[in-house]
Every structure is written in structure tokens, then in C-alpha cells.
Length: 259
Image (cartoon, rainbow, N blue to C red; front, side, top):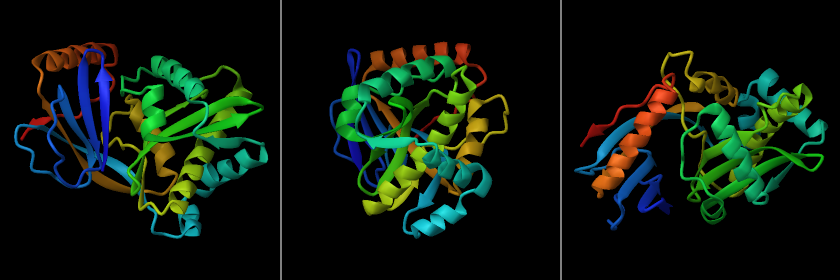
């Protein structure tokens, strides 16, 4: 279980990741359980079911490698190494944050409370570098048992075709490096950070599924819970979601229910 305290403007949010039990109650404007592997008894919370892809890290590394798609995944990882793309760990936080901010603006991705201080304190940052330039980066959260993709950004939308190709190779290499790191650290599960189960081909998550599927994970179900202790925070969040839904109507929301 990983607990993160977040300052969201004038509000405070407590995120509790990978919880298999109820954490101690604290005076936050919003308490948010994320990626719970099983249902929790949390009266008064809103509940949401979601799906993700996971890889069992109890398998041997060779087995995990062989379960990946040979053409679209293993080939690209091998090619990335041959091209001279390097990976680095927990450096370049500021550069990655700038990349993600631009990537999020172009792709219409909403806020996920990412900040440089949050990355440095709570997670693992892997970046792929070519000729001194960061092509892509993945930020992960981990509690020592589970490692989950939290934020992924890249130069894949660059107009330069050669750079876009290198960035595509780098994106797969970063996932493989994260899996190897998690295995070496005796973690139990690699989580791709969500999986779209809808059928709307316009939803950008539909295309991302192909990328995730190439790594050979299995579909898993998770639970998410939210409790609002501040009416003002709830109103602010509803206002943001309303604006977001108008700007990006092609993204299908996952419904919340009251427990």
C-alpha cells in the first residue's frame, strides 16, 4: 500500500494505492483509493470498477519475454538497443514533466496530480535518451510489491518521422526495462495502468490497448473509491469534469456508484 498526500490548489487530496485494507482516516478534502485488487468495505464512498493488464513477475524473465509479441514488441526492443537508445533511472524529472505537459495538451489528457516533487518522492522515473535528448519517459508508482504505470509521455507526435520512429522503439524499451527492474527488486506484479474495455474506436484508449497487449499481460479487475469531505472540492471537481467532457467528448467515462 502506498499513501500520497497531494496539494491540489487550495485543497488537499489523499491517494491510497494498492490497498487491500482500509487505511487510517485523515482530515483531507478528498480521500481516494486507487487500484485496489479486491472490494473494500467503505460506506459513504463512491465506487468505480475498472480493468487493467498485469504481468505476473513470479514468472521467469525468459517466459515473460517469450510471451511478448515477436514482431511488434520483441523486435522493437532489440532494435532500440541496436540503435543506441539508452535508458536512465530517476534523472531528468524537470525535462520529463515539461514533455508530459506538452504531450497532455496535444492528446487532451486530464490532470493526474503529477508534479516534479511528487515524482521524486513517491515513484520511479525511467527515461529513454538518444544523442543526449530524452525521447520518452515512464513514471511508475510502487509499494514494493506492485509497480504500476502512472504517467507516460514521449515525442511520438513529433513531425520528424525518423525521431517518431526512434521514440516508438524507445517506448517499448522503457516497459521492458521497468519489468526487468521490478523482477530484480523482487516485486510481484507489473501493472500497465489501466485497460479500455469499451468498443468505441474513437476513444484514444482503444488504440493504446494494442500497444499494451503486445507485452502479453492478462486482464485484471480493480476497484477505486472516493470520499469527499469538502463540498467546495466536490463542486470544483464536477466543474472540471464538465469542461473536460465537452472538450473531449470522444473519451467514454467510467461510472461511479455510491456505496
